[in-house]
Length: 325
Image (cartoon, rainbow, N blue to C red; front, top):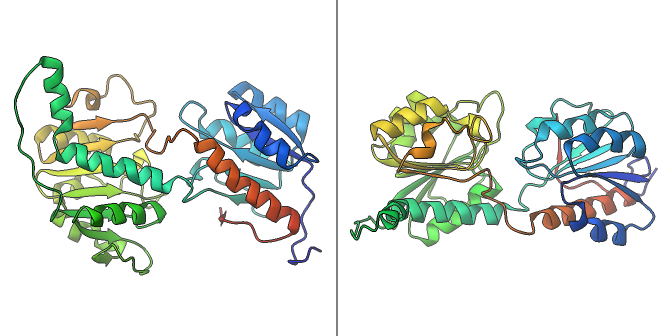
């Protein structure tokens, strides 16, 4: 029994699932010379690495080029006792055996970076930068009027760590900030905090709506045709959380009709976004390839959190950000 009262199996081997292991090798092996680190840098290497390493712990760094379903076999492997998700979302590894495996994730590590992207998207859409890019291609000299963000209303759907940073940025720009959250914990930059059940009632007050929710059975297609119709005419929509939270077909119709004035989308129901999607060619839409928090050193930032938790595991202390199935 450890000093914190937590009996844990010693970690002798760690599997790192990441397509650029060289970025992390020195950080990990230099800090823990007594632990063996094995690496899976592509899809085909995950299963062999599990068999060869029989790891007790896994550091999983997924992205659109190395998607979550490829990482899932690691949490099912019988020797694994701890699985660290290199992001905040963990729907891709559900379900797991909570009696055998402890799961932690990385909320907040990249939150400020993602909030910067959301803020940039608000400024770009509101300031017509997407339209100026089109004019630049056509060599058209035509000033476009815009309305200042000061005094506009932002609705943050899901006031988690990211949402709070977005709220801070919006308040600095002089915006009126509404937010929904399941708990009633206040935040200084939020003018009005509402329960999630009030979404349909308040969404029509917002000039910009930004989604910051986990994907689960309750949030899948939460933003459907009815909710989109309830939005203010000409309002803008931002989604950097998970694509299936929005009914994409309904959103396309709302954008085509002009009811939704513009959108910034980083996530989609199907990724990569199919070439046949009308979203590619919409002049009022900004698209990024699931990269809103793709700050250059993101793997190192997440690995630092993993290192902290690995030290905690060895000392028998509670791990940061433990999540349940």
